[in-house]
Length: 93
Image (cartoon, rainbow, N blue to C red; front, side):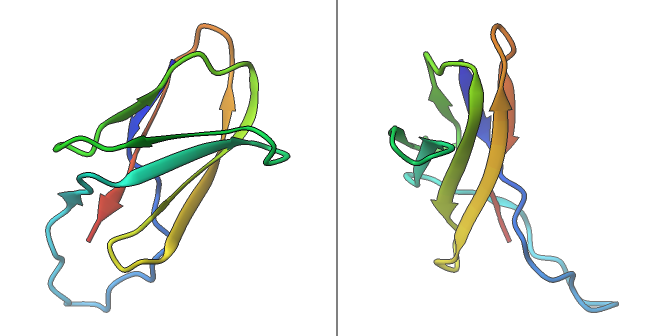
Protein backbone atom coordinates (compact mmCIF):
# COMPACT_ATOMS: atom_id res chain seq x y z
CA UNK A 1 0.00 0.00 0.00
CA UNK A 2 1.20 3.49 -0.77
CA UNK A 3 -0.79 6.41 0.49
CA UNK A 4 -0.55 10.13 0.74
CA UNK A 5 -1.85 13.47 1.35
CA UNK A 6 1.74 15.57 0.28
CA UNK A 7 4.46 16.00 -2.27
CA UNK A 8 6.96 18.68 -1.37
CA UNK A 9 6.20 21.64 -3.63
CA UNK A 10 9.12 23.28 -5.40
CA UNK A 11 8.31 26.91 -4.74
CA UNK A 12 10.48 29.89 -3.89
CA UNK A 13 10.72 30.85 -0.24
CA UNK A 14 8.61 33.85 0.74
CA UNK A 15 10.39 37.18 1.17
CA UNK A 16 11.43 38.09 4.72
CA UNK A 17 8.45 39.49 6.59
CA UNK A 18 5.95 38.24 3.99
CA UNK A 19 2.71 36.83 5.35
CA UNK A 20 2.40 33.05 4.89
CA UNK A 21 -0.83 31.79 3.47
CA UNK A 22 -2.48 28.83 5.22
CA UNK A 23 -1.89 25.30 3.93
CA UNK A 24 -4.91 23.91 2.10
CA UNK A 25 -5.41 20.23 1.12
CA UNK A 26 -5.97 19.70 -2.60
CA UNK A 27 -9.45 18.19 -2.95
CA UNK A 28 -10.63 16.19 -5.98
CA UNK A 29 -7.12 16.40 -7.39
CA UNK A 30 -5.91 13.69 -9.77
CA UNK A 31 -2.68 12.09 -8.59
CA UNK A 32 -0.79 9.71 -10.87
CA UNK A 33 1.92 7.20 -10.02
CA UNK A 34 3.99 5.67 -12.82
CA UNK A 35 6.75 3.12 -13.06
CA UNK A 36 10.17 4.65 -13.54
CA UNK A 37 10.10 3.88 -17.29
CA UNK A 38 6.56 5.31 -17.60
CA UNK A 39 5.05 2.15 -19.07
CA UNK A 40 2.67 1.45 -16.16
CA UNK A 41 0.57 4.16 -14.46
CA UNK A 42 -2.30 4.33 -11.97
CA UNK A 43 -4.31 7.37 -10.96
CA UNK A 44 -6.53 8.33 -8.04
CA UNK A 45 -8.42 11.46 -6.98
CA UNK A 46 -7.79 13.02 -3.59
CA UNK A 47 -10.61 13.15 -1.07
CA UNK A 48 -11.85 16.18 0.85
CA UNK A 49 -8.77 16.05 3.12
CA UNK A 50 -6.30 15.59 0.24
CA UNK A 51 -5.87 11.88 1.06
CA UNK A 52 -5.23 9.28 -1.63
CA UNK A 53 -3.98 5.70 -1.67
CA UNK A 54 -2.43 3.30 -4.17
CA UNK A 55 -2.65 -0.41 -3.29
CA UNK A 56 -0.79 -3.37 -4.74
CA UNK A 57 2.31 -1.60 -6.00
CA UNK A 58 5.27 -3.85 -6.71
CA UNK A 59 8.68 -3.08 -5.23
CA UNK A 60 10.52 -0.42 -7.22
CA UNK A 61 10.98 3.27 -7.93
CA UNK A 62 7.95 5.27 -9.06
CA UNK A 63 7.24 8.81 -10.16
CA UNK A 64 4.31 10.48 -8.41
CA UNK A 65 2.82 13.56 -10.03
CA UNK A 66 -0.09 15.98 -9.80
CA UNK A 67 -0.86 19.59 -10.64
CA UNK A 68 -0.42 22.24 -7.97
CA UNK A 69 -3.02 24.87 -7.16
CA UNK A 70 -1.22 27.19 -9.62
CA UNK A 71 -1.44 24.56 -12.40
CA UNK A 72 2.27 23.74 -12.23
CA UNK A 73 3.36 20.11 -12.29
CA UNK A 74 4.48 18.69 -8.95
CA UNK A 75 6.43 15.45 -9.08
CA UNK A 76 8.50 13.29 -6.81
CA UNK A 77 10.23 9.92 -7.00
CA UNK A 78 9.34 7.39 -4.33
CA UNK A 79 10.96 4.05 -3.53
CA UNK A 80 8.42 1.33 -2.69
CA UNK A 81 9.66 -1.56 -0.56
CA UNK A 82 7.67 -4.69 0.37
CA UNK A 83 5.54 -4.26 3.50
CA UNK A 84 6.65 -0.63 4.00
CA UNK A 85 3.82 1.91 3.59
CA UNK A 86 4.87 5.35 2.32
CA UNK A 87 3.19 8.61 3.15
CA UNK A 88 3.49 11.93 1.31
CA UNK A 89 1.41 15.08 1.29
CA UNK A 90 0.38 17.52 -1.44
CA UNK A 91 0.19 20.99 0.08
CA UNK A 92 -1.04 24.13 -1.65
CA UNK A 93 -0.15 27.60 -0.41
